[in-house]
Image 1 (cartoon, one colour):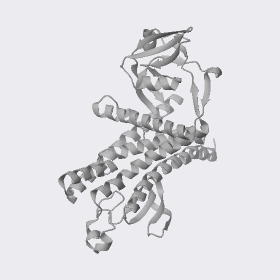
Image 2 (spheres, rainbow, N blue to C red; image 1 turned 60 degrees about the horizontal axis):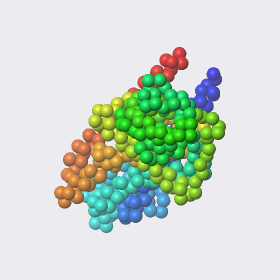
Image 3 (cartoon, rainbow, N blue to C red; image 1 turned 90 degrees about the vertical axis):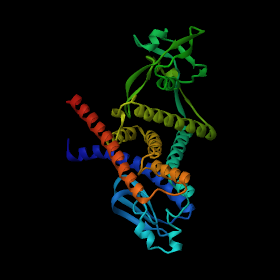
Image 4 (cartoon, one colour; image 1 turned 135 degrees about the horizontal axis):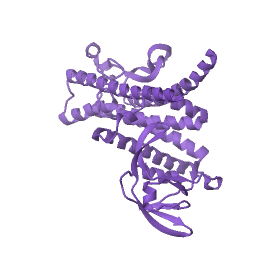
Length: 381
């Protein structure tokens, strides 16, 4: 394979990765930017990426919009801050007159600061809803009827008495319209007893099954979910596309966003409780790999990935870790409760702790990516 071919193959992963990540980061920082400006805060810089500036310009408000060399994040630097993480610059604040100081981030009341900080994650959720709405409205939703084709031996389905040809109508009284609907209920209900209403040879009957917890491989890595042990009939006559009005697309987009939020929250909770493992965490290498694969499928698949990543970034930033938005919100909650802010020394200590935690998280995620890629190469070899 020539060097040019290698480069083209690599670009097929890097370009979609940069597109997806830049889209998510831009809207996250735009949330901070817009609410900050509405609150009367002067903004010194809006940076997409870190490191040396590739391109930049000043807007009429004096904000430097910059595109930087390392496309792995971004920041909004408010006036009076020492850096893009909103750490106050005491020396700079001391040299300002009253009028200039009033335009700084730190001079705003606690509720304005909280609104500015939470706007970033909220923008991520809004972006996901907009993307999902567009996909549902333009492309509809492919629906595979929940007709059982195969029943895995010694599975939960086999123990419950499922048979090939069964049409799943409802789970615990909730109507099931597609095989995906059934999977989502089962995956989030490991070790929980579920009652399935099925249609068999024109008759309806109830089957009780308890999905078993199992590691399954998805495009985003290995995850532990509930598994029933049935396969669907993928015949053409069992497929149809359901189209939605704009209003229904918006409602479905909200439901899709909430589903991803709840699944992510469940995983994070399991991680804290010791029920989940860090080997399920994915980092930038895995995101790049999946971005490339989604780009091969089409723009809709790539945008769908961007929506999922946007939700993940929104949730991650709401964690109460200093350095992240959630850490700032925690500080503001303490400030609102005690009537004054934590001193600068305490905030600096929290900032260092936050850096350590985020760096550790990135280390584990990247380590998992490298380990996964190594295994793939060994299997290929």
